[in-house]
Image 1 (cartoon, rainbow, N blue to C red):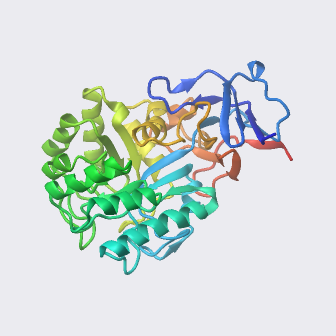
Image 2 (cartoon, rainbow, N blue to C red; image 1 turned 135 degrees about the vertical axis):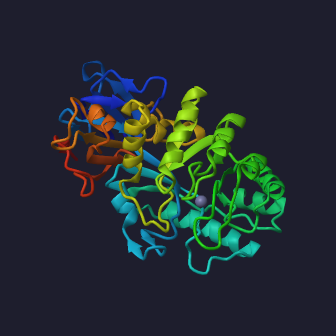
Length: 390
Ligand SMILES: [Zn+2]
């Protein structure tokens, strides 16, 4: 018999599915860390639950996914000499992060055997140690000139799933990038690219021609990190391919709205995914994903329940993840949140649509409570409580 978690008395269930972002219901059941059923408590056989949570009428969504982070080791980032940035981010509702390269490692090896060794080690150390329970999918090598097909095969066979941002290493031309991205894809690895101007000294410009030629699965920070491409190039990237359109907190907000509006005009909002691109020169953003949801919803006129999909189900689908969708079989990773105290708006969604952050009341990862009332968001009006646990 596995462990059963029941969350009842939920006021609003967000699914992460852009085609049906709200589910009628008030109850979610997870077994052994995986979603078992969702709907009305009256229709669900919750059985003999090990843990029961009374949501007190607050909203539940799949745990937020940050599609673009630069972790290094444990819950420490050398970039800003900061401890516990991942724990702080969990308090912002993020339960999964995807590395776009461990580029802030002091003395990062750039020779091929060294970069492969570090990618494999980074994949292992985050697989073996989840800071505060957060799933950090790391071990993302930055490609360098001289890599051969065999290197990508070795990386993939060793458990490496993602390339770091193309363009942060010596490979900055489309032709070489394309060859290596194709090798990565052949062995089942996803790829992303540093779109736009240089981020910090040592990185370079990647324009739309390089992005299109490289053909990575994700157009990494299409709104720049920080420096965005000119408007016509951003529109061209949206129109010319079907790759994921990743918008980040560390980018240009105006370019973020341009990307959003272009994707909407193309009827391709399912391609929009969110990241922070932290830690970076501008620090870490514990509430970065919530802030992007509020930004895009309020200034981009997107219903808040759709904006949540950008940080959950869209990312799950675009990046083949086992979390981010409220669907039986997906990981029981949730964020419970409510309208912030004294926030205007008739509902929590309305308050977000007016640009306000919600208050996080609890996070759950693999069916285990990982944080309760957030120490970082504005205080939620209502809070979920644990009714029983054994
Ligand atoms: Zn970048």
